[in-house]
View 1 (tube, rainbow, N blue to C red):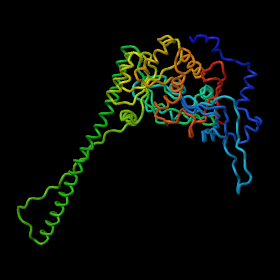
View 2 (view 1 turned 90 degrees about the vertical axis):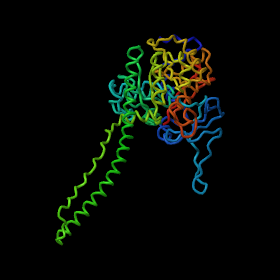
View 3 (view 1 turned 90 degrees about the horizontal axis):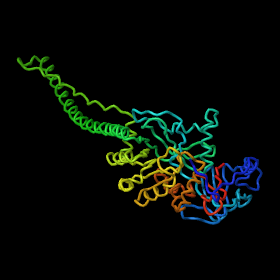
View 4 (view 1 turned 60 degrees about the horizontal axis):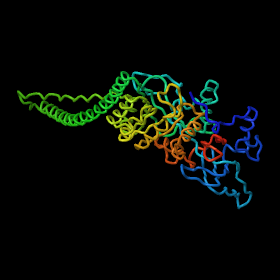
Length: 460
């Protein structure tokens, strides 16, 4: 159970009427609410804040951040200049929203749970299901209101990019994908697709499942080797075919010559008739399967593997799979990952820890800091995630800081580090041009200050 926070960390819960008023006034400007909807804010506007965390450890003050169609197009300490009309006349003043507080990039949540109920799983074969196929489900259609509600919940928590996972049913789940949000609250795929696997925790099942994965990867490798063998056979076939065509032409030439001799009455008695050459058979092509292509892409390092593993034995198997097949693998869960920190560092396997305090987890909440620090001390790349409890993400991270974690390192673990694990642009998780306009606005010293207001800005 999540313990009650200490009194100095209690959040202010305003009454419903005041909450509605605050929502209306969020990032308020001199314009009316109707003007806000009609005056083109969904196209381009500038937020003027007291300061901005443009990256972990980097701040500017004051801060002017311009958003166009939901994307950051300008970051500066100076206000945007007046736009001049034709011949320098008819200038227009940029729309500026003056707010109090500090802007920061939205978080990157690699374990959000969003999308887990979209489809079932398949235990027997690596599925070719693609989460990308479900991105358009975030429409205003009444059938999709549950997903819309989930998306809004993630955005309200200050998340700019979330991982969409087939995290229910089966050990081989398909291809997940990371997604950002546009101004219509629809999901937009970011980066490459990710092959999803999961290992159970009990000793009997974990070894059996890992062996199943080995068969899948070995089968894909054998299939590719069969193509190499096919290429060799095809080369020999082409040589035989060239020889056949030459022999066939010689046969036809001799046949034609025999006809001429017969016509002229010069046919030699006892002359042996030439035998028609046999055309060589082409080699059989290996059968193509798209799921194998996805597995091979993971083995070649072209795509990532997201492997959920909690127990010591499961994590050992994950490390072995990474080494055996050269996978670009990151670990999700990792209850016992700190016990294998050295091995994970040597294998260069990043770990995504959940800040969730679910009762089913096998370790006490107060151990999170020591587990995280043990991994970092051994050189393991560590990202922090919500584990599905989006609304409590900052609060749970704040508890980690209250226990002694460095706030800059925690902020990196919520923004730039998970973006790096996903091989996204190095600017993702920062307030930079070209990045998502899903931002945080916080008061106080940091977004983890539970005594000060923290609000999420969703571009319009």
